[in-house]
Length: 278
Image (cartoon, rainbow, N blue to C red; front, side, top):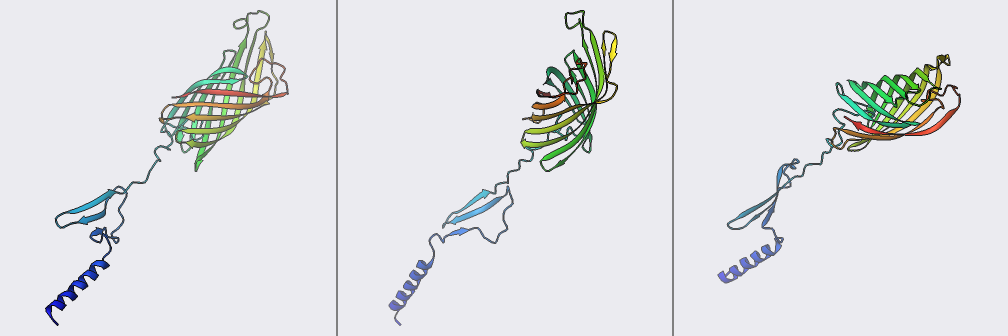
């Protein structure tokens, strides 16, 4: 075979081989057998080689979004949410409540750990003053928190010429209230919690002194119950704004102690409350 014919055959074979190579074959992809990059690590996407230069393209593997910190429960806990403050933590709250009449409120709650907490609370409008202590136990299940609580409150009220300009009516009332209850709470956003609470009201003892005449029912009374729905909002997980509504079904003389008829009639009425937790 002549040299000219041999050269033609070699050139034809080279042309066929060149046509068989896919376009861009000169760009070497990263090995598919390499282990996957971990989140946050750099990985080689592709390389591009020329006669004098090699270009390597890399990218950082994105880390998965972790927003658990944004959904975290406040370190100092909450006043009304069932779980309350953590062990050794405290919450103070001041505000107001409208329950037939407007009253100033102050609350304190201290966490004991294992879901237990103790608290103290005050309601006052001068004519009626209520101070009590209580305890609560709660637990969490998923996004919910459930709790049981019990409060013992004492009250005293006065109505006379120091408040009302009259010398014909002067009265002082006092007594004890027992309030067992339950709560159910839910975290609805990263910085807001709602709590539905139920409290029953019992009066083991109460009495009124009407111008020297002391009147008492002599036996304990079931005074009714209250349902409250509170929202606690803490955008910075420090201070907390709270507000809520309530529905009450109580005797007509609760908490207005100066209704001395001890009427067995029960009435329905609404209440609202708001304040700030420190």
